[in-house]
Amino acid sequence: MALQGSLRDFGVAEILQLIASQEKTGILTFTKKKESISIGFEAGRIAGAVEERRGQENPLEAYLVASGRVSREQMDQLSVLRTEFGIPFEELIVREGYMSRDGLSELIRFKIQEIIDNLLTWQEGTYKFTPGGTIYPASSIKVSLDAQAMTLEGMRRIDEWPRIERALSGDHHRFARESHPILSLELDAEEQRTLELIDGRTSLEELIDRSGLGRFRTYQAVYNLLEVGAIKKLAAEGPASTIEQTSGELARRLKVVSMAGATLVFLLGLTFLNVLAGPTIRMFLNPPAPSSKETTLLGRLLSDGSGEQPANSRESYMQSRIELALEVYYFTYGTYPAELVDLSGAGLAERGSLADFEYRAVEAGSAYTLAHRQGPWTVMQ
Image (tube, rainbow, N blue to C red; front, top):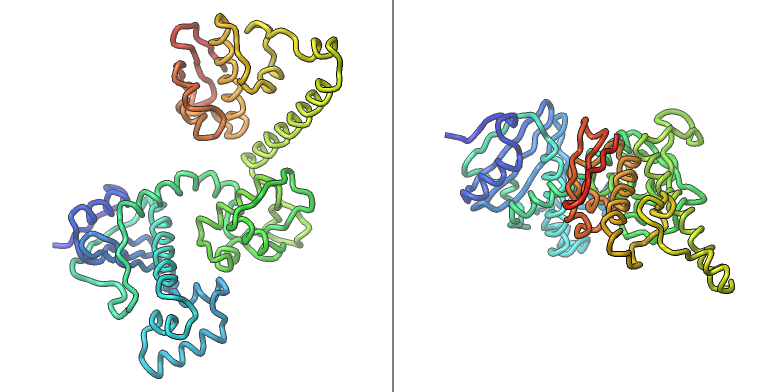
């Protein structure tokens, strides 16, 4: 009897792990409306995957052409050879020198991971496991991938997916380069490749095809470029000069970046004066540390935590820094974090600095309570 059911009863990750743990061999097929995804297993390890949308598969050949790895003319020649001699496409592309066998295996692994990443976003649909089946039995390039590792990697990526998807709001949008980025940062290889493809005319859907990075990594690269102001999002319709209002979340993030830049300039100015000024000005620029009641928001923002604090004010000082981090988090995401450790995940605080504090988000994330484990509670509304 085949294993089958609804994704409302069991999630995708649970089903994948079940097949892997029982070392099954066969094809696990997920179906949702006009989409289907099939994962091939051999002794519990992933051996292949295929995705079908609106009755059309997205084969490896189409990906190689769209990403520019093989030209349309070259693909036509390969198709003629495959038809004439009956050689599997994977074997033919290696024989003709377009890719090495290892390179093709890595590409297949990448495409399988991309399919699993997409599958893990499914919240509804059905699944069915058919024992004994094989995906692409004629293929000469075999892969054997750890199902649990690929599932965990996919889950890590989709944790960030809702935030990124909200900011980019659909594959139909187009982007243009900014002449004056907000921040000057060194881009990684994927961001640089994506930036080179952005021309004000290419849609996000086309970027996904042309970048060769897959849907998730292209979205991530575009989102990162938006965050640092290297690109801008254009209107869904009309000329490229018409700029669409970015999402509220993205706008808040850019404001935070701008505030950080202004603070850095201010700090550099203070450092310059402190070097050149005499003792009197140094005394003015470096007054004794204020008590917790005298600590201002600006003082908390400029403090880097490296200086020693008086023993009787250290708890108040650390609590002030955490309160500031909570406000920045709220300013960025529109809600206070569910748990205090989320500040560390957002890069706003070191995990170790949070251990001595108790925190609760209340009123659906619009307020919170915070206290040192040996001190009074702060209630923020």
